[in-house]
Length: 111
Image 1: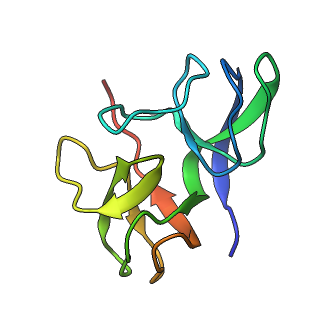
Image 2: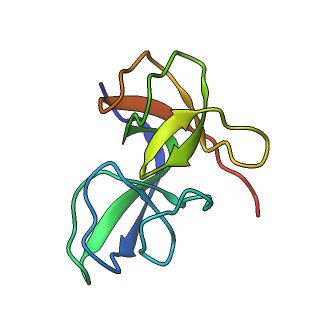
């Protein structure tokens, strides 16, 4: 498993955040209805800078079984299949079981 990032940004964590979690530009963990800035690749405490993969591939937790090519959306801080044109944040690159870390392709979206 690897990350191939074309754009990584830093944000200040608003609260403790774990590695491989979706995060917003304001440093808060993304909610299911948010379109995240990207995914963290390290843990950070409140007030600390954390790197965020924004464009490319990243590592995320699977919230359900994934198949390669699945459109992904957020659910409970993890990625699950079932994204559509309004909430797709990426694509699964590999099969994964619920709770596994897996590499995903991030799909940017203009607001």
